[in-house]
Amino acid sequence: MSLNTVATKGNLISAKNSLNLAKMGYDLMDKKRNILIREIMTLIDKAKEIQDEIDETFKEAYHTLELANIELGIKNVETFAFNVIPEDSIRIKTRSVMGTEIPLVNHNEDVRNPVYSFYGTTESLDKAKASFEKVKDLTIRLSIIENSAYRLAYNIKKTQKRANALKNITIPSYTNLIKHISDELEEKERDEFTRLKVIKNRIN
Image (cartoon, rainbow, N blue to C red):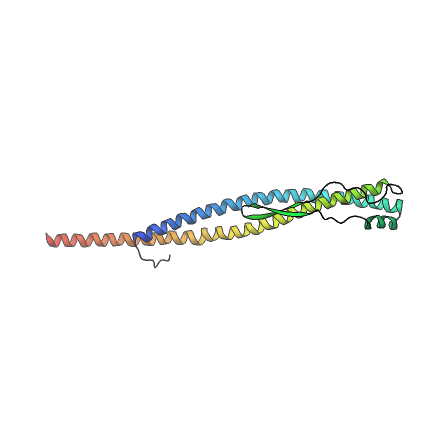
């Protein structure tokens, strides 16, 4: 509706209903935005924790790998590394948070048996293997969180735009329209009252 809408009681009721819907829509958008913001703040905290853990685990992994290289020789360690089985257990699902599709990654976290013989190897190689497997698991978890945070941030931005449009454009427009129609109807009622009074006076 525009300010050129014919001033009738029907249009006034319609404008009031539209205003109420716009206000309800704004409240829902605002609540949705707040829920998404709380969700993304939780993810940011988790991401920082996991990133710190990854950094520490990487340090440990490379330290034990250096020891293994010294004890076994770089060529031997490379040979063992080529025998590592590629990760193929990753399965991706999704869950919805206020309309935002959040990825869920399932993978086998069971510790795999070494692909090398214990004979002729050292404890440092075992520790390096375990540390790098932990890094892999942590990296998968971090990728889920970062992807989820990105999607939530995009949805927050979109929700904010819609909320702003309702608050700054739609609601003021209907408020002005209601005032415009109400003023015109009151003016018509005054004119009608005056006209009837004049007719009554003429009759008398």
